[in-house]
Image (cartoon, rainbow, N blue to C red; front, side):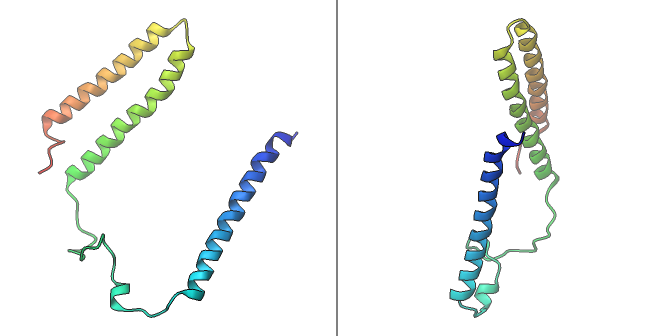
Length: 125
């Protein structure tokens, strides 16, 4: 009954054991071989080699969040297109319906994109 799951469980066990060993070895070796001198340069936050400017808790512009939400929206569009393509390829009787359905979906997203573009949400000032 559980025979088909044995390779999967075996693989998961190997992955977990390997992860624990890697973490344990790297942590243990860094403690054994690493130096423990804390200098101000080592304790300073690293930000791409640049000195830190300002506070980390600054407020972001609303446009930043709007662009992020638009990215998620149009990213989800592509996520829905892959299963649709598989269903379109497998179906033989309802291909016209599936094609019209996807064209309506893309048309609605296109109208939304044009609306956002005309409103200036994609302009970064």
